[in-house]
Every structure is written in structure tokens, then in C-alpha cells.
Length: 220
Image (cartoon, rainbow, N blue to C red; front, side):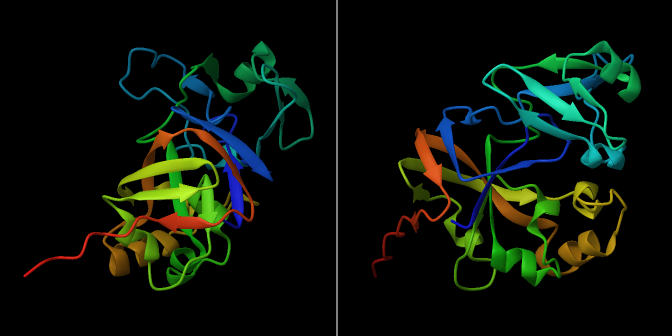
């Protein structure tokens, strides 16, 4: 494993970590905060996201301890994540969910090889939790339906990660480049990376071996 990332606030910039605890609900403190769009509380998906607000990636949250998150704005000001001033700036309301604010599943995996195959040297635009160096073309596709062991953690790889306009957002500038998404659509059926659920909680760390379970051989 070459990198591990958490995203303290949904759709904002991520934090690169040396290690992370993984519970039944994913990485500790990953996407535990999000901002609800004004007037959309009863909407099935009310969150402020990069799809509509690419500038969110320029807001940089950091965890001070297990309960306090501070967000640095693009202008350099810092707010507690629950500060009404930050909510007013974003046009939304901060909300905390103990089980996380996930679009699909609790843990996302991506290989360096898959990011490179769609023309991106910077895997951060795909917002993975775990970045892996593995051999082959789109190697994580073969893990779907099996388990993967990383450090103390066992993950069940449930499905491929279907991509959207979020991958078009440059993580450093917030500018859109739709060519990345077009490449994924043309060459990999609009998917890149995989989603997984937690079978055995524990800790993962940069440098851990990633061991996919072997599929049983077919008889006959």
C-alpha cells in the first residue's frame, strides 16, 4: 500500500496519513462531516458536493483530535467545522454523522496502475481511501467478489466504483478537466477502482502488503 487518505469533510480536500484505524464503518473520522444544501434537508441526497461546487476541494480540513475539525478556506481563514461563519460562506449547514457520509460504500481502493491507465499521474482526483501499487492492467477489477487483506484489516471487495464528474476536478486548483472522465468512459466502462466493506477491523499503514484472496480453481 503506497498511500492512505481520509476526508474529514465530504467533498473537501483529503488528508494523507501514515496509518489509519478501520472500523465497520470505514476509516476513523472519514467523511464524518458534510454540509447540507440550504432548503434540501429532506432531499434524498442533500449534500454539497464537488459535482456542483468544485471549489470545495480547495477547503482543507484537518483533524485536531477525535472531536475537533478545523477547515482552512482558500483565502486562508480557519473555522471550526461547525462554525456558523463557515456555513454562511458555503451556503449550507454542517451535519455530523457517526457512520460517515458515503455515496456508496465505506472504503474505496484504487491502484496506481488504474490511475495511470486513464492518463492521470495524480490519483488524488479519484479520492481513494487506499492507494495500492499492483501488477497488471486495472488489477483491482479481479478482486471483486473476493477479500483483500491489508495489515490487520480484511476487506470484502463488493463492486467496481462507478465514476462521475467529481474526477474532473483538479485537487490543487479546483478547475475541471472532463478529458479524464471521457477516458474512463471510453476505455473502462465508466468505472475505476473498487468499493469494499469491512470484514475484520484493524489498522492499515503505508507499506503494508496487500494480499488478495485467491479465487478457487474451476474444476472440469
